[in-house]
Length: 553
Image 1 (cartoon, rainbow, N blue to C red):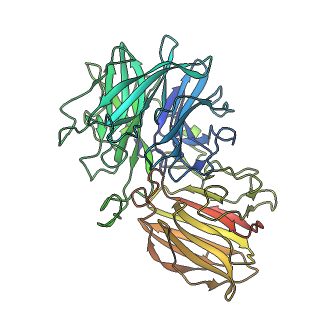
Image 2: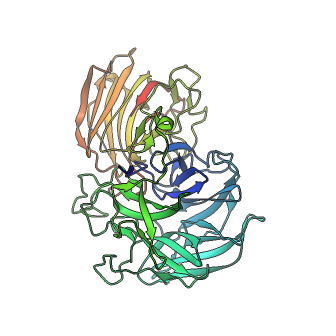
């Protein structure tokens, strides 16, 4: 029986995958947006089992995201390898949802995938989604999409190519459009070469349910590029993209939003494409929604899946089964990791996972990310109380500068999260607890505080696009006892609990529809995914701390 890979391979918020193979090792880099550190890198030996191994952008000198908006920050990293050096190009978006985007493109390099990575070298800023191509004559080029602030735009979509000088670590020579289209919008471009053809592999039709992947080719890296068009590419209107991968006409498929691919060849000559995708919740936007009315909601965000590919006799690339529909299961490569190699690992959906964290290590697990800034000693400590995580309260949950918060990804529509916390607030401006959030404007926050009349208390706060309401009264709790906090997620519904032991918890607040924590429902951001975290705020400025004994997801 043939081994299969089950999709998605990276579950929960892991969009814009870029993949490489170096000898027997595969690496995938994915976007992190406003979450810090920047760019998640996973490693595999068989394309099926993946382990998070680090973040190339892990120093403030490399990445300072203070002040960036929701779903801005680090976009669409492209990971490549050439002559013993790893290259990573990416965009830092600082202005979006506006007329003139600020899309700063950078390059970092390393000899070891685990770092250290270099300080960023600035590239051109024509648009986002940069990708570096290493030609076989030693020359290097960067391709990216082009943003256009003019009204109306000259073209629906443009892709631009410019040469990169590795000695000067800078762009060189003229920048030239290699794709211009009145109707078909392309982004997320990659260039690769096979035989005598240069292939331009690009995402089409946005990042929603209409998303897809197109492929073009040319005899010159500068073009002109011809788009692959075939009968199996289902199209319902003129101007629709010719996609070799898409789910836009099939709402029943699990892997919606499929597109934004990158390619890898195994040692045995098999070809695979990784791509972003999304699994819809059972919730939808209302008919009168300001954005995307009646759209399905994708709380988990955009994930990473993999498809097996093959080349046609006339040198075009297609899915192995000859359709353009993403598969939930695909055939694994001929050679996979040994059972012995994987026996001591705990895998979920093909990825190694952390479940319960008792905070008994010297550093935080790699799975955690924070908003915009690193969690240094000003924000938390694993040494102040061994076996506990101490979180010092800083700014409020709307802050884009100094939040004390760490979070992990929502990866399934049936999940449970819990934590044990000790916290002794003095005033109502001091809070700490368990949070289920999408961004700074959208969250459900089960937290302990202190009310003038009730005393030490617990309550549940809901923020939906800057509309705030308490879903529970200020309920008194015991002063000198640890408090246990819990969240149960069933599809798009959430129920919170609290108590003085793991077994003795009671409900707090209603069975609440959490579908608003999704790409489609949030007004400002729509590129990340729901996260589950723990946090602490002290709006007095004195840094009151909370101690967490464990955090379990």
